Amino acid sequence: MNKRPLTMTDFANLLRDKGVNSTLQRVEIAQVILSKPQHLSAEQVLEKVNKGRNIVSKATVYNTLRLFAQKGLIKEIIADPAKVFYEPMTTDHHHFYNVDTGELVDIDPGQIKIDGVPEPPDGSTPIGVDVVIRIRDGNIPKNSAPSA
Image (cartoon, rainbow, N blue to C red; front, side, top):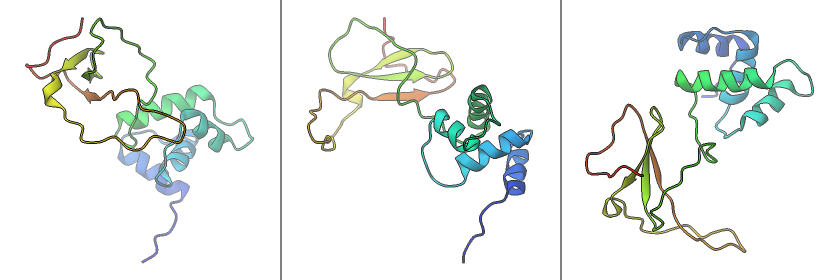
């Protein structure tokens, strides 16, 4: 069975169902980000929404994407975090990052096992593996030591 493409009205209804006021700008952003499986940056969303026009501001795109993530419409994946942590422990190890408190906590090295690493792109060499497990609401395991 073929599904029909979603209309602007469909996107407006989806936003309303999630408790989001469906302004024209939000509906256009929803249409870009929710129309198909994809990974887009805020800049890419801005470019696709405006299509050479200047109808949506950069701030509106960032605020709307944040709102959509809070409402569970999209998932925010932090691939290049704006927050940098420094710690004295320089050996390989992994972390929990509490998205609510901003706290970074070490994970006991024996708790994570990595069985293999994918082949890197041609001309590159892996130099380490960093696992950051994002958690919410202060649910940090008792056996993890806080980072300094």
